[in-house]
Image (cartoon, rainbow, N blue to C red; front, side):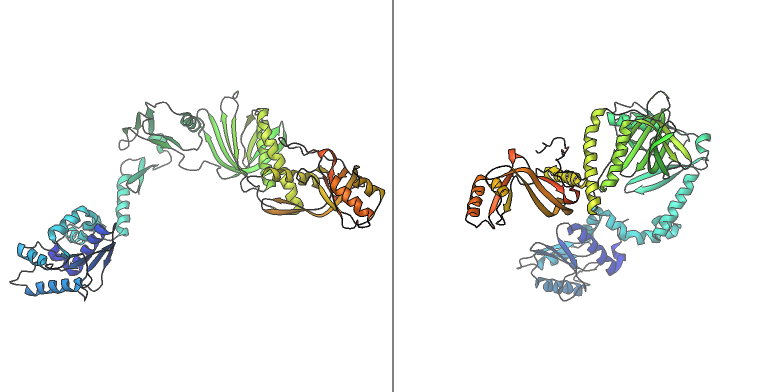
Length: 561
């Protein structure tokens, strides 16, 4: 329905023109509607694009401005134009709701005589053309006209004149009509953008029995391995995962059942996934490993899904840090398929160790059950994984055990770091061995130590300074590990080596100082023999004799001597 310009009135005319100007220019320019139309500046709408200014003057003259009957209108237009020119616009546009005569159009163009400004007219024909392009703008302003016509036929609600209440009323009425399509089934619907989503719903619990609906997929082309596996799990085992068969994969989808629903579909994308939670989903459960009647391990979690298909049964279970998926064939001779995925992100070492132990328990294979308060819901036998797959997990477990011991000793708890440098890993291993009471040859300590003489002279001191191997003991009262941006204090340590020698230059200078009676304060550099490393032990672990170092036990790292 077109705008009836001679009936919209001045306010309606102004609103329509403002909306049209905004729609035409808003993407590339700044549009301003000026308050107080016909004011001192002679500007109703101002459009600015860079340095170019376009001024719109709105005059609601439905029957134009001929010289014979409306001389005052031309005077008003001329005055508005003159006021607008004070701002120096590059273009001035007169907007009127009528079709101008040749004389009226000539009058408007004459306003620019001798001036550097473009003059244009938007009359009714121009406005109608613009509204045709922007039909939604026109529709929003013709609702009142439609409403007046609708009242004659009692169709006010069809135009949603009462807003959201009419929307609800019409949707409810349409739902009532959908309920009448079939005695056993109805359809719920929802709009998402330009898509209407239909959800089939049984009117009673036995709808699927008395009026079955069958969906048949035919002409299915080759599936990629991931798609084929997803179909096998969901159809064969009733697993609750989403499956997507893209267009071109399915030749035809045939729906049989109630007449309103039965039809063939081609060139379709097929998706399926469970519509609601399965029984017992969300309940507490335990993953229990058994040896005959004896429970060898048990891990708590939450049951997420129980499903069944023609091939077998499916279970999903959430455990701390991990997710378990189990497929159990109906064939008693076939092995169950258990997949356990986990992430240590955000877990402290103690919790991460439990997840890792569960993973290693699953890899070892054996009998298991999934138990709830209602009883055992699933069980079977897991085949063991190849032994070659255990190596990396063993190293990860050692790392977590080292970190957990250090955190427990220092009472500083934090999530497992995602990465450690080579030096950080060695330092963490050394810290764990020290806490366990061991002596360690540390590759992180400098290969030499600087000691300062106190001036005392003895044969043992002269023997060391002369180059003979001699025990060296250095006490350190504050030893700490720097890890993940934290300082982890381990306590006082003793740094020592049973056979160290003084470097020749510093030894000779120290002997000369002793001979001259100036040995006090002299610095001597000493090194363990044979390029060995200094050893460390916590002072609280000393028993009177200097212990021998134990290996670090880190694969891929050379053992220090």
